[in-house]
Length: 582
Image 1 (tube, helix red, strand yellow):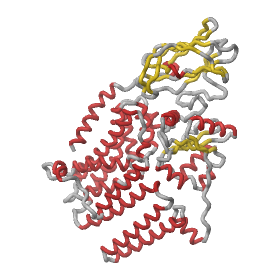
Image 2 (cartoon, rainbow, N blue to C red; image 1 turned 90 degrees about the vertical axis):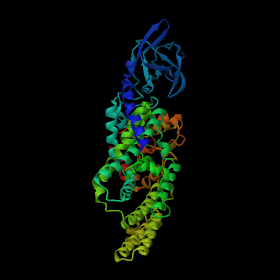
Image 3 (tube, one colour; image 1 turned 135 degrees about the vertical axis):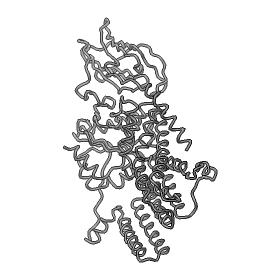
Image 4 (cartoon, rainbow, N blue to C red; image 1 turned 120 degrees about the vertical axis):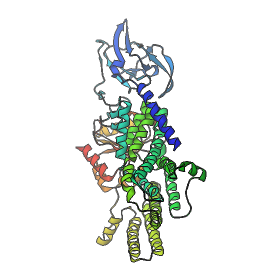
């Protein structure tokens, strides 16, 4: 319990300091870097008046006329250890570029700058008319960036205003508002399938008490459990904020998935009586304290480790939150934000334990039956977690085998008619699941329907994607779609992304999905390496990580409200694809 209290004190004492050090709301790019042009003899002089607290990258200037690079000189800068680009040379206060352009043709100048300790702006481009010295934004073959848009290397790719809406909502907010917002996001996440496995953990924790659980006791245990969960999330937020890296790709790795599945198998073995899983006696005594009611410390430790279960799930609010924290660069804000999100996830658990804990009877034989039920439930959860790593339909085979074992266990231990009827029901359900496994498509009810109707299994769809792992390949894919005047779906994936495997096995082969995506140029952006170049592309596109699907119309503009993040169903993809074609 003491480690939770200490962590909470550290988090909340840092709130004031974090609030006072929040970066000032960034200026508009033209206010931060005011460009003026003058003629000095035969040369053009481009001068940027740089606002205090801002800088331009000296090596990021490029100047062209048509397809020709124009030689130029640029004023000296100073060395800086930049969080985004490493050791670079930057220019504060004023930047001057001198060049001698050819007559007549407009000059294009590209540059990029940052707020010191704050945001970095996207690469900017301006067009200078050598005769009139008028400065404009690029037009013609490019879509001029407007407020709220993000461009990919000035290529005309425009992101919708509502993309990554969690991060956009929170930009420039106070610490109190950030914590309140993340508390709300956590409450939303509490009703996703990823969180459901921790409900039986809490019920089992309450049921192990030696006496009927009162509302006060249920509240104390569940709140301590949720605080442990929230502290674990807070530590992740601190790491993300400190490092500036979105670590959700590590949480999605096959190794992490296998470890979580193994954890559930260990818990299941304990519930089924293979061994007694408990803390060392010394720690148990310390947690117990004087009151004898002591499992508060154990509840906190259990909550802390439960973060492993709910952490790897990537949903839209969590993806946007990770982007916001990684870009903010403040470990205290990251810690407070994800602590609030973790606590929000646990609010329904506290309500359930407080108001429902008193309904549980005293410990007795029923607890042994509940333990066995949870044991089989944890095995089922392990199969569910490991499904993306298994061959197609293997999960159904394992579920069927589990049901048969549960039915045999029930008949051998309980000789009542109800037990035999329940065992028959489990066996029947196992047979239905086995049909789906034999059929090979993972849909047992469709397999049964085909047996009854004596119809052949439907042929799966065969979608053709252009796969690339580079910025250049991505731009070529957009050019190919533009030549055919086709909309484009960008699917961000990686070989370590376990959710992506589920999408590619169960969603993309759907015939309805194939029909909805007919006429859409399909592109996979593979970020398996997740190097600096891939991260830069994802940052420009406001993508937290895989799996993400982004839908662009034929003018390279993202269709608002269609982006899909994390686990998706066929119906979600069909809906977004249909909206793209309207």
